[in-house]
Amino acid sequence: MTFSLDSQTVEIPCGKCGQKSKETIRRLKTNPDLTCRSCGAITAVKADEIRAAEQAIKKALDNIRKAFR
Image 1: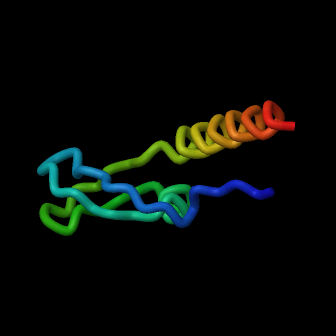
Image 2: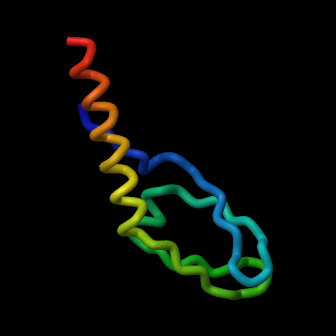
């Protein structure tokens, strides 16, 4: 079974004005710079941390599956 959070949506606050933007994980992994629609500031999301978190979740789910075999 393939695990992916790509279609999940998260809210990211602007680092300058706090305005929240909704983006998919897929978009953040491929283009981690967000331009605020309110003030124009650019917020950089750490795509490598998103990928690492996704891998950690996948590993935890694999461990749960193994426990039920």
